[in-house]
Length: 194
Image 1: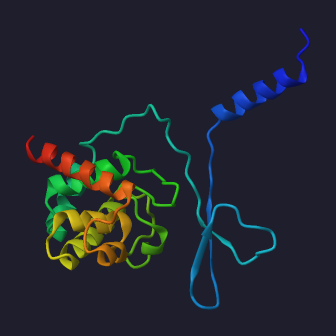
Image 2: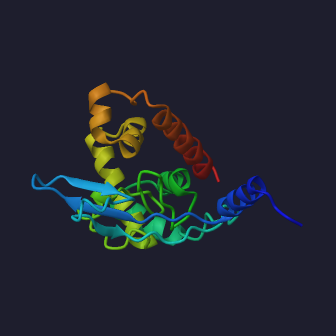
């Protein structure tokens, strides 16, 4: 059977779509101390260095146990004074308990910590569940204290950053952030009432 050019193209496209896509993250710090991140450094910019080596993601059909990290969540909950069901709800909303999760923006691990927060939060391996959960709990507690215990604002700050919440003095009018706060609150209610 002879395949024409269009059939070969379609076959290649279908096979390529089935393969997993990986993207490493590169970083360089300019002369002003500003960090620049990319997944595709250009050859003209030799300053970029490998920052995060992406690990292969599990297939979308893989289910992560919501109980697997309960001991680590409990420990971080006690250490940072964040309610266990709330911390678990944040993890559910952020990564659905996938310790290898990497967002399109580069947030990593169970609590989706951004690379610029690794050093301030003491993270050496963002995919290590213990490090990630402790760093995320610590960061959330900082947001909670900054916004004087207002849970919705603290969650919005965790998602969109504290400056966005400061600017709007409420949950920022970003669809992603508004949906994020709703999801965490729903999960929090569910975990609290188990």
